[in-house]
Length: 176
Image (cartoon, rainbow, N blue to C red; front, side):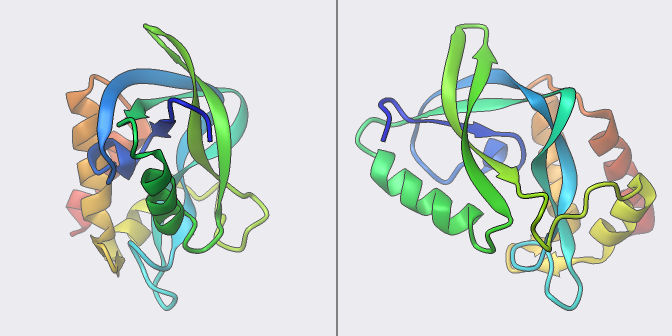
């Protein structure tokens, strides 16, 4: 395991990392975009009524802003185990180390990206369809809409705009 351990968050990890954080930096990964492209059958939906969660989806020329977290020294092993339990629950995410560019320099960060060959992958849904799904789904960690709204609020606090997510948040409020 590399020292120090950095983790890149672009969705719920931004507001609920679930591990001890020594440092946070706003950063950007190239070649990926944040997208509601993963059907959630555990945390924000069910098998009968899947929700949607964010994933990094590969896209040439794209980039995604998020937060690079440096894990508290000594907590690397426990953090890795907790992240794998949380993020790899259905194997729809792939664990990758990506370069995150920050104002203080680049770091290599553990990042969870979507497996486009996995059955839960659903890239290409229209924003209207995403809003409809998010408005109606609830899973083990609560309503799908709360996940969206919390992510949008925390991105705004950090000064990271995401026009698609902001539109989705407004549309889901109209639907619920």
